[in-house]
Image 1 (cartoon, rainbow, N blue to C red):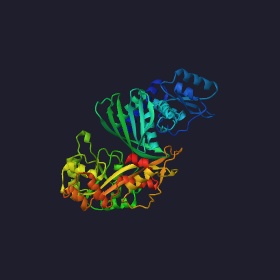
Image 2 (tube, rainbow, N blue to C red):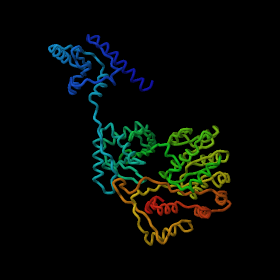
Image 3 (cartoon, rainbow, N blue to C red):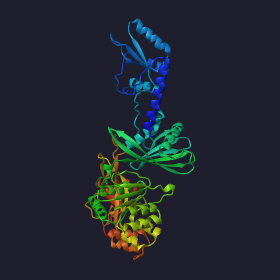
Length: 536
C-alpha cells in the first residue's frame, strides 16, 4: 500500500468515527472531502483567533431565508455552541451546527489562515577574513526553522552553483563551506543543535548512519524549483567520523540533460573533431583521466549523449549513477557492498551492447575485462585516475603488465581540468618579463597567432554580479590519440624509463599538453594565468 492509499484509509477511518460521534451527540454530521479545497470561504463572521481557539468555522452567512451555519469539531466547547444559538435566536436568525472531523477542520483553517511564507536572506560567500559576512549567514541559518534548514542549505548551494557542501566538525564549532567554481569558500558556522538536525535529516534521506564508526557513502535526489522551472539535483553523500564528530561532504550534480552536450564544454572545434572521429568507430577504448572534480563524468556523459541514438544499445555501470539519461540502460554498481565493475561488465556484455561506459577502472580485473570488451566489437568509455595521458599509460602498464592487446584497444586518452572563466568585465594588462619568458618556454614549438614579445593577459575584476570576477568554469583538455608510435611504448617495442618519453613522442604528432592549453586559454582571455597555475 503506497503513502497516498494509507492517508486515504486513515481519513476514511476518521470520518467514520466522526459520523458515529455525531449520532451519539445528536448533531448533524458533514463529510467535507468533496468540497473542502474549493468551497468559498465565509469571511467576517468569526475572527481567526476564535476559530483557532474554539475549533469552529463558519460555513454559511445567514440571510432572510438562509440560516447561519457553522462547522464544529469534538473539541468545540458546548458552551460556545449554546451561546451562539441563543445569540442568533434572540436576533431572529436561524443557526445550524455540523460536526466535522479534525482533518476537515485543519484543511479549512489552512485556507483561512495559511502559514506565512518566510523569506530568508540568500547566502553570500565570504572572502578570506570576511567575518561580518560569515556572522550574517550564521545568524540566518540560526533563524531558519528546524524543519527547513536542510532544504534551505541545498537550495542555496544550488543557487550559488556550488559543486560541494562541506560540513566540518571543528573543536568549538561546526563549519559549513561550499565549493564554487572549484574553490572552497567559508559560508557559516552553525550550532551543534542545528548540526544534529541537519545530520538527522541527511541520514534519513541518504540512508547513512550518524553513529557509524566507518566511512559511508549515500545518495539522494531533490527537486529544485526556481523561476517557475524545476530541475533534479542529484546528491552524492560521503561521511567520515572525525575527532569531533561526523564530517559530511555533499557533492551536488545539477541534472539538466540538455547541458550534457560536447558543444557546451568550451572545447575547440579541433578537439571536438578528434572525439567525433574516435567515437564514430564501433570498437575501442576511450579513457578520461584526471583527479576528482575535474569534470570527467560530465564529459563522458556528454559523449554518451552524442552517441545516444535509436540504432545503438548503450549500457553504463556506475557507482553511483550521477545523471539519468533517457534511452540508456544505467546500472548501479555498489562497490561498497561487494559489487565490482569487472563482474558487472562481464554480465552486460552478454546483452550485446554497442557502447559501454564503466564508471572507473580501479583494478586489474576491470582493466583486463574492459580491454577485452573493446577489441570484440564494443566501444568502451571509462575514467582512470592519473595526472596525464602519458602517466595513465605508465599506471595501466604497472597494473596489467606489458599487454599487446591493450596497445590495439586504446584509441584516445583525454586529460581534463576545469578552470574558472573570466567574467565579461575583465581587464587587460601587459605581461612582465618573467611571465613573458615563461609563456615563450611553454609555447615553444606550438603554432599560434600571438605576439610573444608584446603579450596581453587578462585579470578578474570583482563586481556585485560577479563577486570573484569569474563566471562559471570551462574545460582544458589534453587529448592523446594513440598512434602507431605511441603503441610501440605500450607493446614494449620501445623501452621507456619515464612518462616524458611518451609525451615527447606525442608532441611530435601534435599533442598540446594541459599546460600549453591552459596558457593559450589565458592568452585568449578565457581565464587568468594564475588560475591555470592553480589548477594545472
